[in-house]
Image (tube, rainbow, N blue to C red; front, top):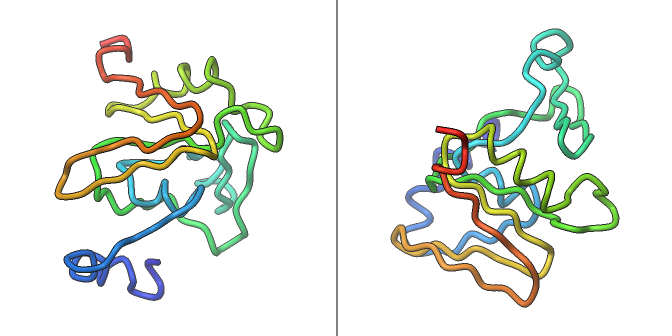
Length: 134
């Protein structure tokens, strides 16, 4: 999104278009994403140590677009991400300074003019800032 300059064009496009993202493409719109920053600094490789997932070399970024003031951890209880349990996500929420939404694959977050609505036929939970040990 940075290299193609889509990140710079999105604010104008979103005035009359809808953005739909799944997994990392939804997380990119949020306040922040998780990454092992020391590994990134040493190797240049993006690694999400919560999901144990590594991005392609020189094709990953830790930059998010910060269009919303929360963060997102998708794939709650998904078999293909065994670490994505509600208990783990609660711990992950402790490391961010904004609310964190833990959502499963049957859940979406709709944001219109700053108003947040969770649309779900599955499971989700919002972890508030005050739960972060502050």
